[in-house]
Image (spheres, rainbow, N blue to C red):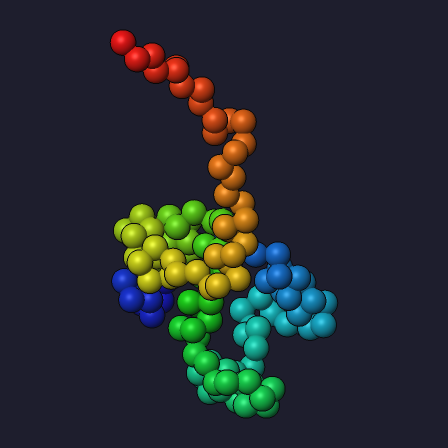
Length: 133
């Protein structure tokens, strides 16, 4: 960590497949780039995101909203909160992730509701018949 994180500690996240594809394409398109060269020639991420959103006709959003989007999608994809928490740099085992990022979009709620089964054979337990005495 370079001291820029809230807690000043390094974070390790997995190399997600879309990021791997981006990096491989970037390397192929920039064969002369040195290992310490910047991936993208920007001075300020906030300004770059704002300009990109405006050019694409999208609402302007921040890196924090992207972080929220990633966390929400990870939870909706079934990734355990403690794993998402580690990606975000939280050290509380996932409590904050559940509280802040754990809300579901209506589509996800409907999708998960379809997974619930009440009549599956494994859920049915025969009970003894009560006998009046």
